[in-house]
Amino acid sequence: MTVHSRPNLAHYAHPPPTQVDLDFAELPIVDLAKALSSPSEKRKWGAFVREAILNHGFLYVINAGLKPEETGRIFDIADVAFSQVGDQEKAQYVAKIKENGSFQGYKPRRFWHIDNGVRDQLEHYNINRDVNKRDHPLPLCPFVPEIGHFAKHNHLHIAYALLQLLAIGLELPEDAFVKLHNYAATGESYVRFMKYYPRTSEDEMKTSNVWLKGHTDFGTLTILYSQPVSGLQILDRSGDWKWVRHIDNALVINTGDALEFLSGGFYRATIHRVIQPPLDQQGYTRLGVFYFAMPDDDVVLEPLSESPLLKRVGIVRKNDVGPPPTMEKWRRGRTAAYGQSELKQSAASDGVEEEVINGVVVKHYR
Image (cartoon, rainbow, N blue to C red; front, side):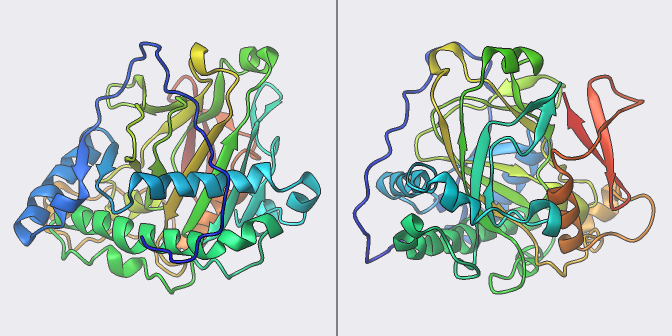
């Protein structure tokens, strides 16, 4: 990712990685440079990615085209959205989350209900892959071209590569998923800058140290740029919560609802949560950089039933009643409902709460 004009910017220094002995998940690592090096390597890595998603739901990606200093620069820019934009200016750019089902702009702190009357302590700023779709706070404006290059790299290089491998894993043409994610189409694939702030001991007690309940993302792929403050956990296939380890300049990838719809339940959306960091990292803020890849808004989220593999193993539909939703309908419904709905205890599973969106049961894990 090359950007020729780069305004000066203060460096964001991450806290040191934890020294606490945590129960980390042992996640597969995909070398993207090797995976794209030849057709035979693509086939091999397509099978590898398929098994990684089936067995773990999360994986790491290395050699994704950004040098460490370029990744560091994006974190520097991300911090501007929070440390250099005042509350009054942030208020002018608050996203129409409940009104329009859109995250574009700021999600303020304390917007979501977590548990027992406790509200969240995180804020994020979301920028559509079309960075000129709306205005931005003045301190961020000099960096919008760089954010645009970053979004394009994530979409066309990283997401497209992974979508090709996922299609190969389903024995489909490698562009089967790619052609549903047109860069210039109407949609809400976006860059997210996020900052978590420490909470009071009272709030930690009321929520059992959970900062975000276990949930699935609603797009196709989530690309998380690894950072050293631990907090992210995945629900592994045996039903245990495992920590996600930090790897320098690596990406952490998880699958979302849209991919589960499109793959007929074969690639399941990954359940993950965020909890209080370990003791030696408590008191630090936690800065995150993401890219959320979603199909075009008009894509109907129905299984790609022409897959030879799905014909063999069968299709499981997320929507039992009625037609499948479009991506626009699904992401608007999930965006507007998250952290706002009155969740109901699941009759089938203890510690699981449910809501119904577009006729589909959406689960949250306490």
